[in-house]
Length: 234
Image (cartoon, rainbow, N blue to C red; front, side, top):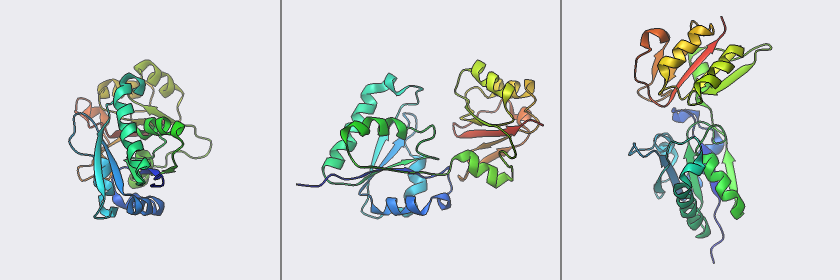
């Protein structure tokens, strides 16, 4: 009888394969199966492309589709099916990795799978990764917060009224997933005195990375889901 395998949630950072931790690389080298999450609209997995240099040749890649929803309860059947597939692999004695962009415990699809696996008493190891906003701050030379600054991290997918409420109070701000409502976000930054210091970076660390310093001039641009704004009060 096979012993049960270990499930690894592996943060692969925002895009640059050199930003993976030693712990993440070691985990990628020991797993038998890698779960590569993707959305319904994409045929590839960004997380897989980042992890690829560290995978052993015999690795099995399994693509799992995850809908882009605010509450995974809306798509219970899809998440349950993905969880059952992972459990079957683990119970067959195979070590399974789940590659996730940024950090696994920070606005990540991994959190849903982690919560669904927990009641099954399988071994789980979660390996932190570098969130995009930290990599961006280092790359563009922008200290995120210092002294007694209060750093506010806001998902731009939240309700606009909630976003405005927190912008009104923020010293330094990170806005993540800025894509659907970019024009409204630009207007809100202007109202709250946060536009002049704002920098937007799309697909940080990837080949098609884009850095925009004059955000107002690009207000009507179509943005990728992986777009982040860093700003602070002047």
